[in-house]
Amino acid sequence: MEEAARLVRGHWQAGGQGLLLVQPPPRALDWQLEEMERVLAGLETEAQERGILGKAVTPFLLERVAQSSQGATLAVNQELIVANAARAAELAVALAQAG
Image (cartoon, rainbow, N blue to C red; front, side, top):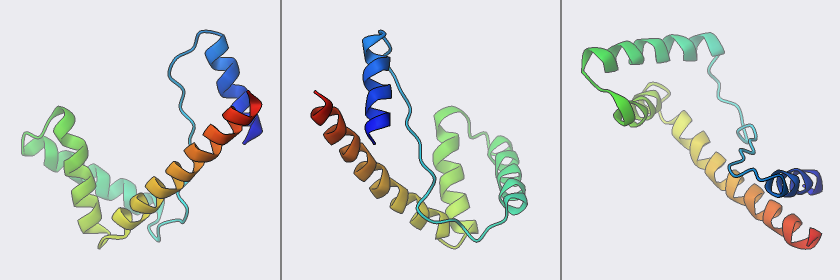
């Protein structure tokens, strides 16, 4: 985490503002990539046909993917929220210790 803290601090010192730190989900879904792509393509088509546009698309897709996965994607996303909060706390501690 110290390396991430150095990167963040350097970014800020260089005048940077937004920064995205990512991590994989804590566990993988049982879905294969091809299956997920097929489901998403069908749902994108459905959203277009139903006139769902702009910021309404993401909630529609998340709800329908959760239904299609029988709740597995929702559970993984919830776990990722908790993991991201823990990672953010670790980064905050590393930044505070680096002074």
